Image (cartoon, rainbow, N blue to C red; front, side, top):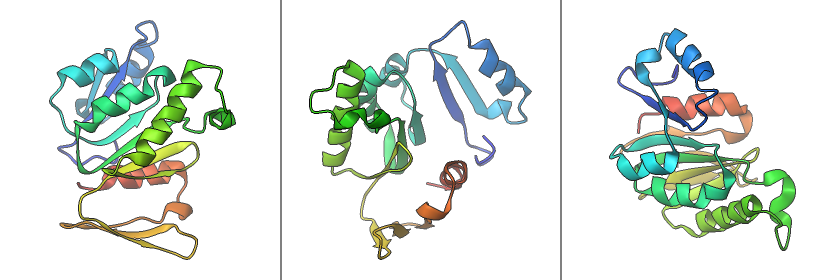
Length: 178
């Protein structure tokens, strides 16, 4: 929440009622507690019921439902929104010709779906896909095909992907005003 504007809000979901006391305790103790909406609710149900539009979405949930989460969240985004999925390389299991588990099959399907979706620009970073909802955006790349600059129609955004640790990158993305 530290990277949010004063009007910003984080909505976080968990289905594990037995362990919900732990994040709730830390959220309550945070100086940003008024900006954190912690819910014990299935994400699929929440996404079907909400009218909220999100700037940033981080999904680290049951891998068997990643494709459904992607389909549900897409309608809850605007141009410039960022979607991050955890474990998209799935410990190398996505390279299996015939994946043995539903989770691996679903992650492979998600990766294919995202790669083919023209509404998104994407990259894999430390087992994470960053999807940028695009609309009339110009990208500038360096000689190693890294994004150096991304110009939006309304604003200008500078990303130095390779020089940031994951935490720094997330903080930088969260501080962007979309």
